[in-house]
Length: 90
Image (tube, rainbow, N blue to C red; front, side):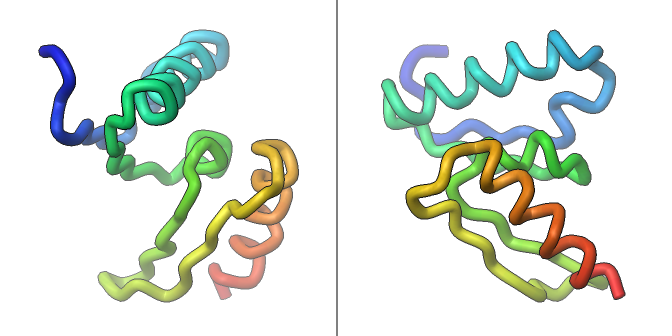
């Protein structure tokens, strides 16, 4: 497929080792930034989610919180996400 209108991923890294998961996420990031392909990713993995620009946290079918990356890098966003998840789960 060339130039998809949107790319959907449902737990795309779930069955991958860490290196393969990182390579897939970097490829998806490149598609998003360089080719302007929107990506909708569903995941339980905070590391995978940290590649996003915007995260919606859903609990019991209800959107409970939205987190936007803003200007921070992926590593900073990952730490912020882990902090938010610690309070969101309760």
